[in-house]
Image 1: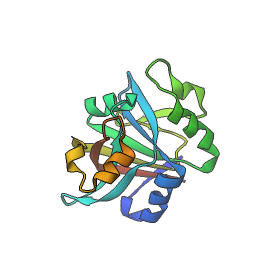
Image 2 (image 1 turned 90 degrees about the horizontal axis):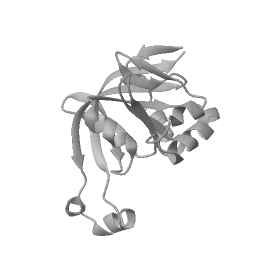
Image 3 (image 1 turned 120 degrees about the vertical axis):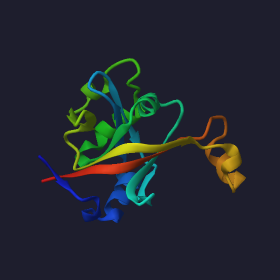
Length: 168
């Protein structure tokens, strides 16, 4: 069971640690079709006088299509017992089958926005900004070459946090 809280009630360090060490699921789409992907790059912050979440998605990821077509996305964080499910979702594409059906996770909706029921923290965002990262934008070209040898850089999405839920 989830209860809604103010994003400021969640210790930022707790979520930052979960993003980098325990991963998160990014989910976007609608009731007809959606997709989730495991991610370990992202941040929470404040810009344009509002709390926001920033995520980075490779152009090859199937979830990018849903992020580009939708105005909303969710970020879900889990207890460690779901690590196997997150690994599966991070290594299989939903392009050809329902990969979520092969996990212990359940897709549900808040105002038509998909998220995962078993999450311990759910952050629902309204997409405010999206931009491709470019080679020219890197001040340190070594950083660019270390991370993007033969592929395009990520696309960055900034979403205004509109709902935050925690497991009761």
